[in-house]
Length: 141
Image 1 (tube, one colour):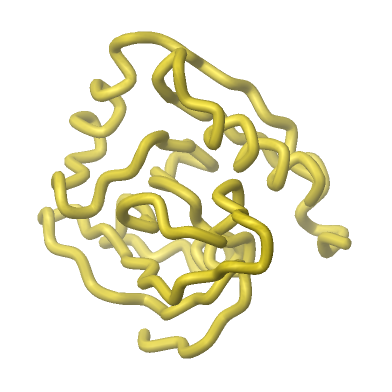
Image 2 (image 1 turned 180 degrees about the vertical axis):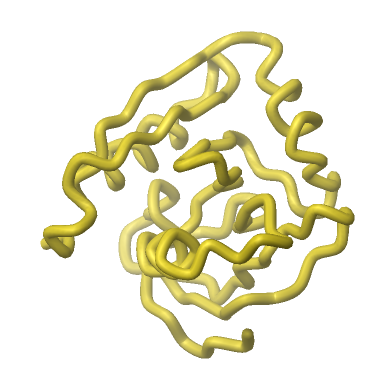
């Protein structure tokens, strides 16, 4: 169950018309109190360019929440941290690639460890935390 403060938040998700895992990540957020709007079109890369998300930090979809880019299958606790702290030098947060077991990428009980990175306005990125599934393993930042 999501914290009460999360109910009523909105997310716009930009993705290819052919991506199914993006819908699953949206369902994950919706099940945790978000109002989800999907924007499926062939120009979904434009949002990545707008937020200057470097290729090594990209995934199959980009969410926008309260003006922050949320790239890929980012777990709810990482999103919550971003929205609670609102770092001024950060444009977003990313789960690069498509790690098995991350929210929306569930494959039975298989779960890879993966980094979640902060995306800075100057184009830099820094590991925020390591997750396995949607479980925080180690917070780095």
